[in-house]
Length: 128
Length: 289
Image 1 (cartoon, rainbow over the protein chains, first blue to last red):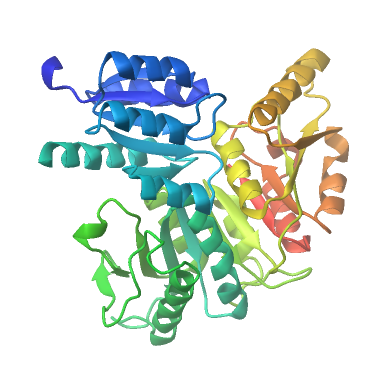
Image 2 (image 1 turned 30 degrees about the horizontal axis):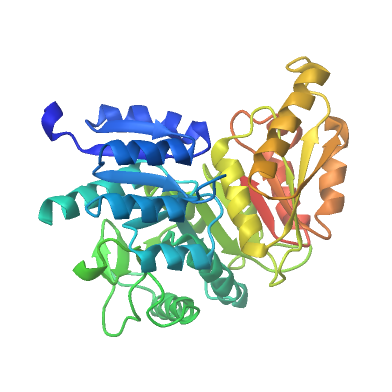
């Protein structure tokens, strides 16, 4: 995969261990990955440049994942957003899909699981 | 998250459908509903098991509001398809490609071995199974099947003993080594039941940490929950008192034991003691890995 065709992914999770686990694995697979633990910093970055895919936690201090999703979509409608959460409820699952997130993954999840979802999101982006 | 639900045709299996449906409604997990039929039953599915699995699927889907679930609708005339020595039935539609899988599967052979093999091959995060209530844990007439699954599974296991919503989840951890995925599984179970969380740590890690290390590890766990607005009680127990403490708590509350590879609890709770806990617990048991 050449640099100019790399799929860009932003990961936002206030638990550093999540990005620490995902970043090297996704980079090894050829993705361009930026990680954040603070939503305001991630939001600032999305204003500077667009990402193909955003992976965001839901429950965070400050701007929560759903608000972050809304902001990202307002700036870059073509970005596909994957929500990950450690405290999943029926309401958050429903709200995620009603608002148009690409997929919703409850923690814990395997790297292979999120990779499969990223692949589907890439496919959707290419087809659109 | 992928959840493997092991079913037989007994009433405790039908009882767990609604609980797993609630967990699925929260997490939108991929689901495998598994039954195991004995070897030598010919080249066809056991009709009773196949019918039961179809009914469990219908009951599972019926727990969701129409159009409000990611698993597709009810199945009608679809048949089980033989695949790699097992039978599978999955409703799949391209329109639902980004949604979740609900797979019915019948494997052939020894139930415990097949359940463990399915969990391993499909990288399940959680195995759920029901069993008889009280001081006995039978599954399909086998006294020790829930024990075997709890002892040998590589992933987390919930053995649901009765349909009673736990008000408290008491989790015994080795606070120094507990894995992130185990903390995450605890969070999902606490969220599911809206249960009070009690974390039980060990007072003495015999030279690995010392008092300061214990305090630091506990402070980290408390911080983790405080930041997520989850109220967690912390209790420290001496390693030599843990077995008795767990036995006492399991009479009333749902108990979780972190038995990951690095867990010091593995030195206190031998696989046989884990099996004994599953057998003797009056409530549901969560084995975390």
